[in-house]
Structures are given as structure tokens and as C-alpha cells.
Image 1 (tube, rainbow, N blue to C red):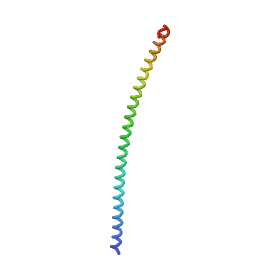
Image 2 (tube, helix red, strand yellow):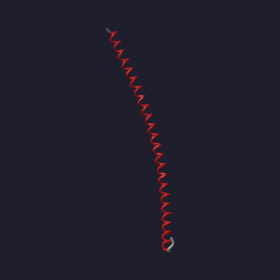
Image 3 (tube, rainbow, N blue to C red):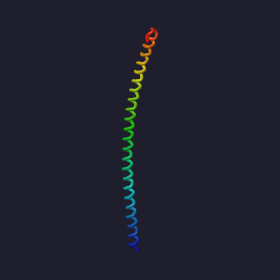
Image 4 (cartoon, rainbow, N blue to C red):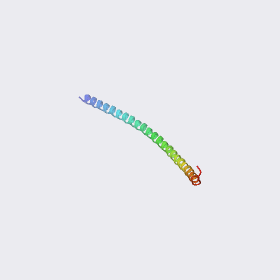
Length: 89
């Protein structure tokens, strides 16, 4: 009787250990996946930040060019007004 109880307890202990090992492997797998996804997220954020910086530089350049273009048109209009005032067309 005693041996069968010990055998049963040993079997339970072995099953519990196997479950513990499986849980550990699942946790390790999930931690690895979490780290992989974090890296993907960080890389995506870096690409987004770089793209945003580039977009901001291009916008500033566009605004600068627009200001320059507006100044040229303003000068053209002044010249046109002067020519019109003197009767030149």
C-alpha cells in the first residue's frame, strides 16, 4: 500500500514538474515574442520620426520658396503698376 501511494505522489510530482517546465517555456516564448514586437515597434517609431523630420524640412523649404515667390510677384505687380501709370503696356 505504501509503495502505491509513493508511486502516485511521484507521478503527481512528475506531472507538476512537467507543467512547470511547460509554463516556463510558454513564458519564455511569450517574452521573446514581446521583445520582438517591441523592437518592431521601436523601429517603426524611428522610421515615423525620421519621416516626420523630413516632412517638416520639406514644409519649411516650401514655405521659404513660397515667400520668395510671393516677393517676386509683388515686385512684378509694382513694376506693372508703374508701367501702367506711365502709360506703358
